[in-house]
Image (cartoon, rainbow, N blue to C red):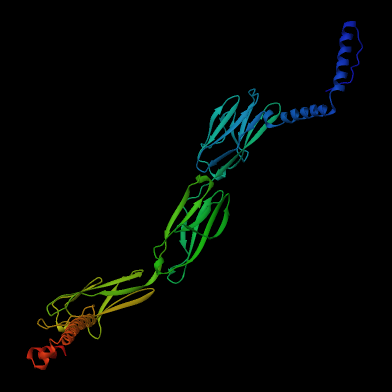
Length: 420
């Protein structure tokens, strides 16, 4: 601070001289310094005062701690100018945990890790959300000094679950709910199908210090969607970028379909017949019914699951055989007509290839080829006849052939007829 003048009562000449010079220098300095610099000095003094009342100048300092549930938390108390006074550490319920390094609370999860004049540190194992709160570091000197270390516990989500609201039937909607029952802070749920996100309706419920989160989607389904893959992903800061993923496959119920696989070739008396009934459906029908329309099954008929077998066929086995199946969502059937021939009977086989059409096409092609050959021969003969006629006309002009015609030459007459 600047002082305008000092007032002293000098007793010695030497000291009076020095005080006088000091007063002069102070007066000159105060005149030379601007008023703003004086304000800066006042500000510096204020900052020093504030620093001395901050934790940097306090006798005790505490550090906040963040830990995952089930982990170990280290709570530290830093001491300034420790003189051997009493140090007490209390939990958020103000119960004394340690008194000068000695455990006061019977909880084996708390252990004294370090006790020095500068640092006191305790460890809390198997941390739970109930351990959250402020832990008091107290130093008892002439006055009590204390600081609070705040313990925060994060709870990562467990593997989410997927629950269908009701049975999924083709032509309807599938309503699925993904649930993350416990996390802190609340987890984020995300539905994915074929690499694309499906927006769901999210709800959140607070259970004490943790949160339960659910996400519900509603999608239309068909028979082809049975077995389609979806996944529900849970994201959380405590997972460090990883995800908890629950995979789910759609279970779409639909009515059965039935198809009889027929045998190949002609069946004659004495042969064996084997018919297989191919069935689809969800759920798959447990029972298959074989029957013969307007008659009972032959005595030699044997049923093994979806297969019907008849040995030593005869014409009495002829008829229409029916395979039926059903589940809770519908019924389906297919039939096969059995025709057994005599061993020596000549049977016209019917193929899927339309031989009548092919025969007609071949006949047409043969006819076309014949027509082309006739036209070709006719054109060739005509061209040759025109040449001979032209040659005959040229000989008449020279008088060489005319005489043969007048004399009734048989060879010339034949050639003329040929030309005509």
